[in-house]
Image (cartoon, rainbow, N blue to C red):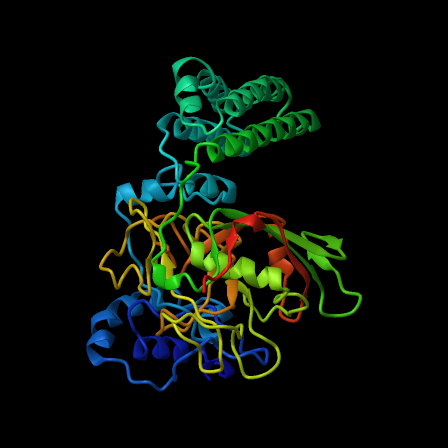
Length: 462
């Protein structure tokens, strides 16, 4: 296995050129510094068609050169799909980010944008409220105050009526709008206090903290409002041949706890020690019903409990390979459409949902479909974005290995995300993502549990 090998940067670059295939090149599939193996369901010496090598070699070379000085993740193993740099069209970039050319790195915002709703007024309200957060962070106090005033105009009159009309329960939405309106006054007052305080003073910091907390409360209410707008009978269409795989029909929340692999060691987060790490993740069945269903099913089965982190290289944190036996994924009843892996692994198809489509496409990538550059509903643009690992040459080889992306806007600039459309993004870390910076190989998942949304997990049909 190539994941047992360590290369110099030059050797890694040569390997990329020789093995260019589609967009294959750096998927997270297991670290060479542990005993885990790469998620390769096919032989690594399988012949790749020459036409595919030649056709995509130039794009691979571009990224290899751009990442020439990259750290270990570039040279340690052969990952998931190859790094081809593309520029999204302006419209696709706008769809992928709530703020146009700025990369939207806010997991909660991305999840809101991923909801299957069609209400223009609430999207305008969302943009206004979310922009306030950026303005607070950059101390653009007057702009934030204007944003609060603008947001308040959406909460009454015709705009409010149109939002309520889209809700499943009008009374619930009316109450949510009233609560949001009530949070905007403390927000405005805190912003005014920050304007009156000396720059850099404790009073300014306290006022901005209060403003941020009020903004966060408003956007939490916004999430509940938008969730009310998802049609009660909405179901993401999935081809019937995948009915023998678990599927997640809506969203679920998963909580994971971790401990250091070394006895007595603690997590060091910006100089503060924690004996235990905890992360909360939202798994999106609207966008990735098969991938999300597979993950929630394995969490519920206890599959990830007491499993070690198997890769941590500054690019991703990954786990999911069984730690005994030859299997490189979960061994269970396979799908008739996809079949089992070489060691009995239950495999699932690659699942990609592009904005504007009615549902995901399967067993293919965005490049294979000739749609490179289009925006996926859930992009890999947030620190802690969750993706499904697989063999770089086999789109149906995913089983149980997954990764958290340590997103870096310098490595993934706006409009040039090299992961979207090649690997399913099925959720985000919404609490505790800072722990990913000190989650290392050998650390242990002490528990993984579904804390909400388990009722939306549909088990395989006979």
